[in-house]
Amino acid sequence: MKTGLLALAVGAIISTSAFAETKIGMITTLSGGGAGLGIDVRDGFMLAIAQSGRDDIEVIIEDDQQKPDIAVQLSDKMIQSEDVDIMTGIIWSNLAMAVVPSVVNQDVFYLSPNAGPSVLAGQGCHENYFNVAWQNDNLHEAAGAYANSTGYTNSFILAPNYPAGQDALNGYKRFYEGELAGELYTQLGQTDYAAEIAQIRASGADSVFFFLPGGMGISFLKQYADSGVDIPVLGPAFSFDQGILQAVGGAALGVVNTSQWNKDIDNPTNASFVESFEAEYGRLPSLYASQGFDTANLILSALETASPDDAGAFREALRAADFDSTRGDFAFGPNHHPIQTIYAREVVQEGDIFTNRILGVALEAHADAYAADCKM
Image (cartoon, rainbow, N blue to C red):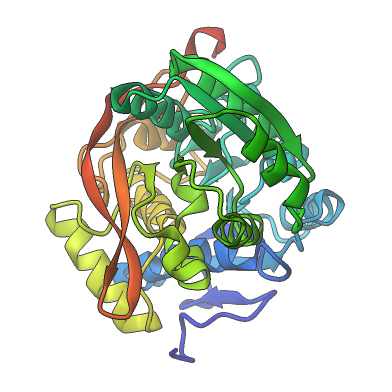
C-alpha cells in the first residue's frame, strides 16, 4: 500500500494550498471493527480529490471510533473551530442521527457517502442534506424483489438492532411477497451467532436474508458455513463486500447479494476508478470506496458552479448532480436521495481473489419509500 498523499493518518488535515477556499470535514470510522468501511470511504474520496488537481480544497479527517458521542464532539469542533463548509464521511446510521440534524441546522452542508436512515429521507429531511449512496432500505428492498423472482416463499430474516438494521428488515419485507419463518434483531457488534443459527436450522425456512455489515458479517458467514446448515442465504452488498469476502473466503461463493455498484459496471468512469484505486492502494475497491469517490466528485462538480458561501447556488449545483458517477446514470429524488438501478450480484472467485459479478437488474430507476414524507 502506498504511503504518500492518499495514505492518510487519523486526524489528518490535507490541503494543497495554504489558503484553501473550501474546507471539508470528514468524520468516519478508522479504528475498531468497522474501520474497513471508513477507510474505504476515505480512500475513495481522497482519490477523487487528488485526481481533480484542485489546490483550493482542504479536507480535515477524524476518527469517530464508531461512537456517537465522539462523532458529535468532532462535528462541533469542525463547525465551531475549523469553520468547515461541508461535512461527510459517517458510516453508521446511529452516528448519522446524532450528527446530521445539528450540522445542517447550522447552515453547513452534509453529504452522506453511506448511512441513509429513513428519518433523514422522510420527515427529517433538510435542504442541506444529500445522500450520495442510498436510503438504508434500498438494497434490502432489492433483495426482497430478488427473493420473489427466485421463488423463495419462507425467509428467515435477521439484522442488528440499530436504525440501519431496522430499515433493512423493513425494506426486505416491503418487497418480499412470501411468509417469514422467523425475524430477529441481533446486538450491534455481535460476533457469536450460535443461537441465531440454531433458530434458523429449526425454522423450516427456504432462505435466509441477513444484514450484518463489517466484522459482524464475517463472523456470521464463517459460523453459518461451519454449522452445516444448507439453507441458501442472500443479503445486501454490505454483508458481501470486497473487504469482507477476503476474510470469509469460500464460504461466500455463489451467494447472491444486491448493490447499486460493482466493479464490472460498464462505463468509462467506473473502469478508470477501479484501475486507479487498485494502482494507488494495492487492493480492489469496495462499494464503500465507490461511494466515497462519487461523493467527492459530486462536491467537485458543484464547486465548478458555486461556492458553499452562496448556499442557494451551491445547493442547486448539488441537486443537478452534474458529474460522472461510477454507477452511470445518477439523479436525486425530491428528498435528495438517489434514484438508481440496483443489481443482483453473485460471489465468485477470480484467481486468488473473492469478488462479485453482476447477474442482472433487481430494481431499475429505484427511489426510496420516504420521499413523500419529506416537506422541503
